[in-house]
Amino acid sequence: MFELLRADYARYRPSGFRARLYLWLFNFDWHQVIAYRWCSFLNRHRWRTAARFFGYGARIFFSSDISWKAKVGPGFYISHGVNIVIGSGARIGANCTILNGVTLGQRRRIEDLKGEAGEDGYPVLGDDIYLGTGCKILGPVCIDDHVTVGANSVVTKDVRSNVIVAGVPARIIRDKEATQRINPRDEQVR
Picture 1 (cartoon, rainbow, N blue to C red):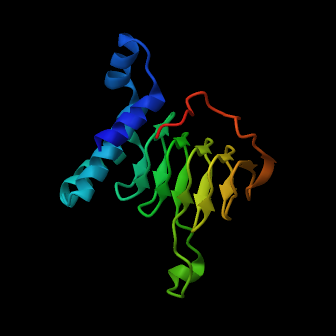
Picture 2 (cartoon, rainbow, N blue to C red):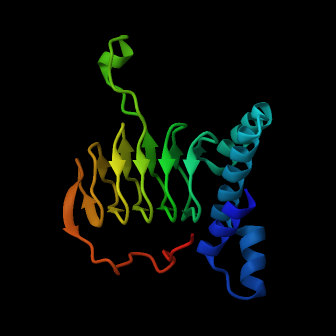
């Protein structure tokens, strides 16, 4: 857990004593990352009742629903972390940046609710992903490395590496150059 938190902390990069103090005492987004890591740690070590208790408290306090069962790699960065929903089966790689209103969840159809067979998976995200405000990634989709998802986009199909996608439904807007970064905090943390 501490290695993951160290990598997450590196993404916030506070410089100077006051910035570090502010991060630890008042940064709502950093506290949300800590709460997720703590609940995930408890769940992995079979303290599921405690994970559930702290997880429900975090849902109420942070107004977000990040499941403690979701698997999130190092370098997790939340910005303006309100109304974020990450389902229990979601898997996220290293150095993911998530803005407010993002949803990573299952895609349920009417047929599924009636009991008929249907695909019932969660999204899998690669490394160095940037998820813009309000984007939705629904169903068993795979998003490869170095992808930027635009604000309010809805992704329901797989996305290849090194692209920017946007729209409803999301489509490729353009390819990204290997050195292009959308966020200056998106340095490699491995």
